[in-house]
Amino acid sequence: MKYYLGLDVGGTNLVAGVVDDTCKIIAKESIPTNAGRSVEEITSDMAEVSKKAVRKAGLQLTDISSWGIGMPSYVNPTTNLLVHANNFGWKNVPVYEHLEKHIPLLPVYIENDANCAAYGEVLAGAASNYTDAVMLTLGTGVGGGIIINKKIYAGHDHMGAELGHTKLVYNGIRCTCGQKGCLESYCSSTALIRRAREAVEATPSSLIMEMCGHDKSRINGEIIFECAKKGDTLAGGLIDEYIGYLAAGISSFITIFRPEVVILGGGMAHAGDFLLESLNERLYTCTFAAEEIGIPQVIRAKLGNDAGLIGAAFLEKSITNGYKK
Ligand SMILES: [Zn+2]
Image (tube, protein in one colour):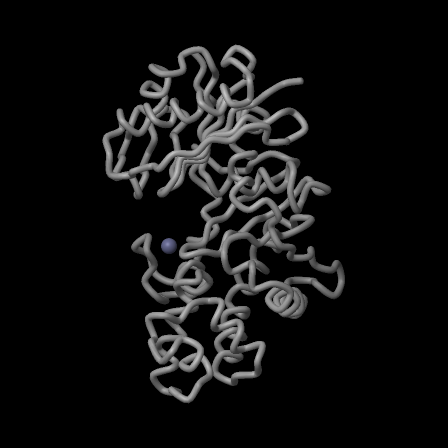
């Protein structure tokens, strides 16, 4: 049996896990990230929580094949510098050198966390029967990952696959990345909530207002979907518009990559069959050559937060440019 060490570096928690070669997590440990701290402090904790997970599994570091880390960032494989991590305020950080001080012997692989989540779902989750998949994570932002032939496709210098920042609307709404009209500005939960808050101004009689106790700041994605299911016209219109934007974005990814399946993760994917059925129907009508060659189905992610951990643990099987002393 081979064992792999994975670490999911989130803005809130550092979650480490030991995964066996059947993709089963055999031990997991977690500590708060405290993101405002120095690179030295956070990388030291990244190593500590990882070592704790190994001990919890009853193993030693010498039993582990490699250490894979998913982060909301990128490491340039030419310079070995972590380019930019917004949550942490890091820019061009020699992250491998910091990590190596604490765990010197293991090969280390770092990849973008959304890519790790997509990889995890294809290895062990919703898309484990497929080799080619596109995944979108719909939360406060929109993350994306592309898996081709059971490997992460991350583009040149591992800085591609930013599906949330593909252009959906020319000169559209300003995105968190500084550009205008990105898919994220229309398909994140933040975008749907913003649209709902604008819309209830003009239609305060909507069930949405009743459900949020007449406090617009309490509107969330769940309330909007719930109202739409109950037949509220305003909520129905908002969801219809939301699905329209999402289908437009996904239809482009289908046309470019022709995956076998599209995986939806993140909070919005929990809207359930209502979202998936409407989305699959809409995709059929708006995707290139759907009548002639069909379209891949959109399915819901299965592993939740474990997807990123499992994907990170197996990075050595997907990327070859990890850091080896
Ligand atoms: Zn953007």
